[in-house]
Image (tube, rainbow, N blue to C red):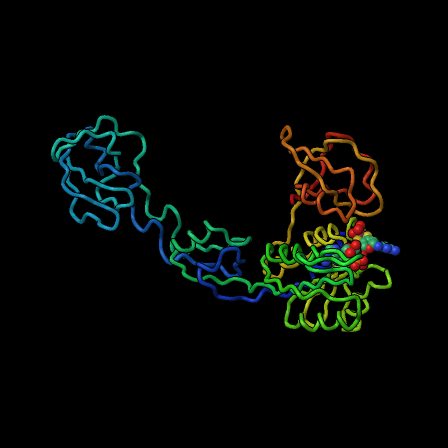
Length: 390
Ligand SMILES: Nc1nc2c(c(=O)[nH]1)N[C@H]1C(S)=C(S)[C@@H](COP(=O)(O)OP(=O)(O)OC[C@H]3O[C@@H](n4cnc5c(N)ncnc54)[C@H](O)[C@@H]3O)O[C@H]1N2
Ligand code: MOO
C-alpha cells in the first residue's frame, strides 16, 4: 500500500490546468483569481484629509489664522494657499496645495472666520497620494477571494476579474441499504448521509456539486449514474470501494476505462480509497463509512478541487501539544478525531478514545484531526503533534 503523501501526489497530478472565466466583482466572492488585476488608478488619487478640521501651514502655528475657504470630499478648494490662512476641510477632501497638515476641529477655537490652535497634535492627518496603492499595482491572492478583496478590487477600479471556472463535481452514493433523509427506512435500510456532506465539502472548496440520485448495488445502476456524470470534471463515488460481493465501484469504473492512479493506501480511516481518471474526468472512489468518506474528502477531494482552480491544495497541518499519552501507532497513518482546548502557547489536543469510522456524532464533536504517522512510537502528554483543524 502506498503512503498518504504518495497518494496525495498522485491525486493532485489528476488536476487539469484551470480554465479562465471573467466574472463581475459582485459574483467573485470565494473565486480563485488566475490572472492578476492591475490597479487602473492611484489610491488615494490626491493627498486626502484624514480628519474633519482645518488645513493649514505648520509654520503659521499657533495662529490666529484666517479661514479663507472650504474643501469637502468631492468638492476640492481651488484657490491659492497664502501665509496665515486655513481651509475648513472634511475627511476625504483633497488637501489644497501649500498646506502641510490638518488639525482636528476639536483642537481649534473658532471665532467668526478666525481660528487659533490650542494643541495641533503630532499627526499631520494627511493621507499622501498613492499611500494605499499605485496605478499598475498587481493583485493576485493565492486563495479564494474574501469580502475585503472585493473592496480592494473595486477601489482599483477593476469591475471584472479573471477566475478559474468552478470544477463540476458529480457525487455518486450507492448501496441497496440507502434511502434519502426524510424517508421511512424499511428493515435493514439506513439514511444516506455521506452524499450531502461530500457535496458540501466540494462546494466549500470552490466546486459546483451535482448530487446524483442514489445508485443500487447493480452494475447497471452504477453505469447509469456514471453516464449522468457526463461533462463533470470530477466524479466522486461513495461506498462500494472495499472487497465485499456488493462493492462494485472498482469493477464498473474499470469497465468504463478507468486509468487507475492507485487503490488502497496506508491510512486510517480511508484504506480503500481509489483514484484515477475516466475519459477526461478525474475520479475519486471514497470509502462508504461516513467518517472515512469525510476524512478522505478533506485530505484528497478538497485539495484536488483547489488544484483544479490553481490554488494551493492544502490543508496545512498546525501544531498542538498532546493532552494525554498515546500507545504506539500501527502501520497506517492515522487521523484521529480530537478536541482542542486553549493551552500554554500552543493549543492542547485530546483525541477521543473511540475512533470507530461509522460514528458521525464523534466527528461533529471533534474540532481537529490529530495526525499520527504510520509506526509512530508511543507518545507522552506534552509532546508536540500535527493536526488539521475541522
Ligand atoms: N474484508 C474487509 N472488509 C472491509 C475492509 C477490508 O479491508 N476488508 N475495509 C473496511 C474499511 S476500512 C472500510 S472504510 C469499508 C469501506 O467499504 P466500502 O467503501 O465498500 O463501503 P460500503 O461497504 O458501501 O459501506 C460501508 C458502510 O458505510 C455505509 N454507507 C455507505 N454509503 C453511505 C452513505 N451514502 N451514507 C451513509 N452511510 C453510507 C454503509 O451502509 C456501510 O455501513 O469497508 C470495510 N470492510
Ligand atoms: O479505512 Mo475504514 O475507513 O477505517 O473504516
